[in-house]
Length: 288
Image (tube, rainbow, N blue to C red; front, side):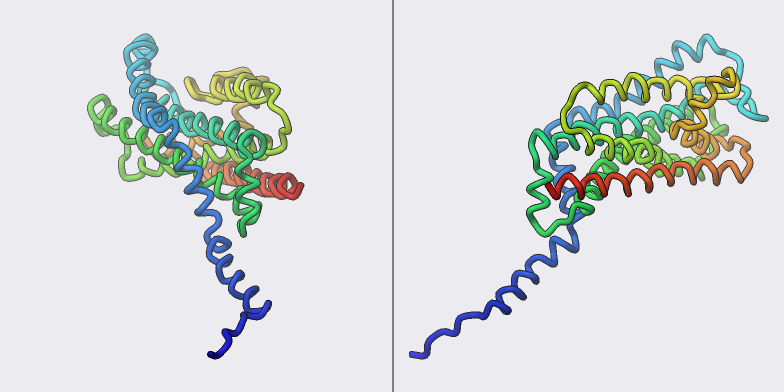
């Protein structure tokens, strides 16, 4: 009987490389899939939040604050009903709220509590792919929340303000909302990745970053009605820039085209800059 030839070390190395190429090529998608599957643990929270939040906010404003503020809002050179003015900003806030959840404690869990990022890193996945996958997984949840919000807005306002919205461009509020969430969340992910121990930092972010941004970024009234020493909060806030874009596509707010470029560029710079920083932090921590 002829003896079976044993594979050489070079052949074994080539075979191992072939097995590793697939996860390396699709590593970002594998991490994103894991993050989405992990969301099943709080899936009902996601569904109720995506569907219930817009209903409660908009109905609450319609019955409450909008009933008091009966006069239209002067938004630039255009007068719009108060509820129509607020709705795009609430849509953007919903995306940023999701981002503040997905880019904080899940990132901390991946490094410290459950340490699954180190498991990913032990495979052919790179640290950059892990960071990208976290972003894509969070984007999937933001997309669901924003799409549900957008659908409710169009159903709601079709009866309240027929003809005042612009459905032809209104769907653009969905990608704008996701971009708003990324512009806030990706730099936050970089910060979360740099934290070694949880000492209440995320609670401070909610109280001293998210809440002032929510209140003073032109969400409930035009930014220009604030004193100048408070307007800077809106100028640096991704919520204000996204809300302005949302109002343009929702009801056709007249805006200088140059400002549309400024709003879009600011959100993109925050997202890309945050991702570059987050990838570096992930690489540094996973190399330990």
